[in-house]
Image 1 (cartoon, rainbow, N blue to C red):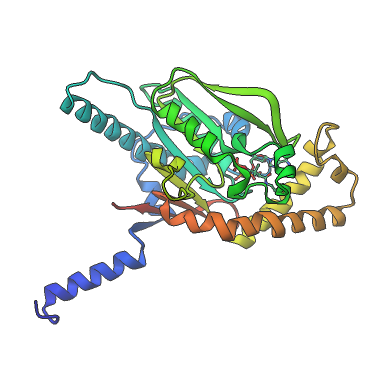
Image 2 (image 1 turned 90 degrees about the horizontal axis):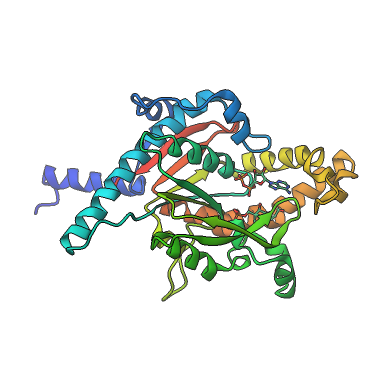
Length: 324
Ligand SMILES: Nc1ncnc2c1ncn2[C@@H]1O[C@H](COP(=O)(O)OP(=O)(O)O)[C@@H](O)[C@H]1O
Ligand SMILES: CC(C)(COP(=O)(O)O)[C@@H](O)C(=O)NCCC(=O)O
């Protein structure tokens, strides 16, 4: 074909545009919020108060504009995957089997993943078909501090090597396979460690939400990654400078609340002055969390099906949705 052929030129422009957007369609907050259509708000302000994380200013407008369109999209996608799985079973001449739908949720420390995860947990469980939804955070699969210390990687908590990746993959595979009860360990933010002997029992959910820093990390060669089991994935994104200030502000909030608990790993921080605590938080952010964000987490953003881009005030300003 002649390179100057107008059709060919359009094709080239289309290819270029797709490359620029990396396969995503980008929607402004206004465009996205219109996609709520008639999805009902099933949450009260008091219930939202219970779900939001420390220092997360989320309100019902954010739920209506951002999370209801997302719940609608997930409902359509969930229905589509159920149909695809039925078609496959019918083709194989096998009886129907419920295959759990797995939703991955990634992003930096302090970006607000846990609020998003808890909110989706509640909204999805309130769909008319009342699916059984379970939420698991990947901190459950961090190695205990004693193991991190023996590996000399205590300062790398949250980096890919600080997780028992195989145990996490085995856990998700067992849930996906329809196992009646699958146990996950339990992590305590207060004690900053795995709780010995404690377990979260996941009982054959219709939907599993798996939230964590590294859920979009690719697998080493010849291994499987947790995201191989995902039906849909979301990355919560914001500017590094904004997340840094959210981390430090939250640290000060925790200093006056959780850190005052005698069981808190960070109880010595409660006795520090404001300036000392700021210095401590800024150092932890810079040496651990920002480094992990830049080196490991942000590079996985392009693997997500949907990216929620937050502005400095924590509200979602843009949504990127993968088209294919
Ligand atoms: N040291 C801490 N003590 C008590 N709670 C904490 C501590 N660090 C984080 N949290 C809480 O744990 C949850 C997960 O935090 P994090 O991993 O930073 O993810 P995100 O902010 O994206 O939800 C949040 O609800 C946060 O408020
Ligand atoms: C526990 C975390 C690694 C998050 O784990 P996730 O559930 O995302 O796998 C993180 O909240 C954390 O504690 N990071 C270590 C550095 C810090 O204390 O901020």
